[in-house]
Image (tube, rainbow, N blue to C red; front, side, top):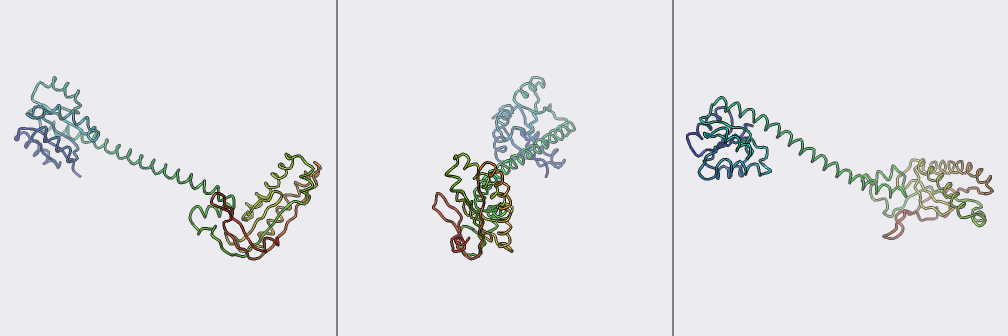
Length: 316
């Protein structure tokens, strides 16, 4: 698109001469016959350069120039002052007002075109820089939004991982599946794990030792749950209930449940030998059952768990 140039001069012959010269070079030229008309034109349209006469009867070129530089929209708009007055004196006043270049009247045509081309190249660089800055601001805004969304997603994911395996929690947060907390019926494999001898142990031991043993035990359970893809229903102090085939269906939930049970038994057997050296006679019991249950949210608005209800849980 051709550069748009505003020619401002109260003398029509001068104005038309400059406009015709620039028009023959392919520029889009608008004319203003005074300072007030120039301000109105600058408000109404976008220009790439202004040729501005200094001596005008209504508002002189210096006042127009000061207005241009005070406007954020026109801060980088090139302005060339055209004057027939003392060039040295007018140059100083023009620099103070914010002029980019000067032409002495009568204007040398070759010099005019050379200065216009030079200033338009500078203006084009400013425009490119402004476009990059706008693009960068937009990208930063998008990044901030994505970070905020990701933070919310991580928070939701962290809460969901309290009941679900990590891959399933990620699917829920991403919206790839329906609400898993709605009540529904499904065949599931249930594993119930608890200590043997825990009551006697807790009666005879310091509370700190009891908590340490439970932390070790729950650590084994947590690792095995994550590796097997099971869903933790609840911890019951010295026990826990885990089920398979819900919310995410499994090809063989019984096999997954049995593999989980064997992994827990193997992990706890290592701990049992350590506990025995400390005088804690603790073993683990594991029950596995398969059957239908009703599953979904259990609790109230301030505290919800994901649970299973049915005879299969009692059997386990």
